[in-house]
Length: 215
Image (cartoon, rainbow, N blue to C red; front, top):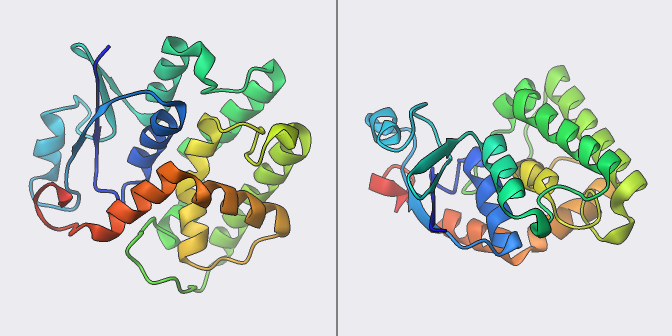
């Protein structure tokens, strides 16, 4: 198999981080194509790779899979031994539920605490909706860690797609110096310490996001 993952720039593209991080942690090899965001020709450039005109996109020998959650499901089916989702059925259902909630929810947090790995680490004033989103995320993390986290430092013990899905949230909480409880902070520390996460972050900080291909 020959995979190509098309992503946006690493400073801002939270959706791109998710499959990229999962593939890196799982040891699934791929080639990377990185496209710039917030440019006049962004949509046209994305349409050259995806019928939806968005990233990320996974290409597999002519097949095109778009949407981050669909990509993770595809990888789970291709590599059942890689632990993309937890093995336990109940844990897997909770992991999928939490990921789907992240996929479609938390609008205020997305608006106020947007992912920006080039931003200085400083807090911002959160409105009531953002504070509710932040509290809900911590509730999800506590439940997963409390019920299924005994096997390691991640939400379901071993790193899974749920962690890939919440990795951009970890960067948001860190970037905006959000005050979190001890369980959340320990989880954030584990995600931020991942070699793949550090690789992504270092590359993001070297980018010139407005330049062609976010070089």
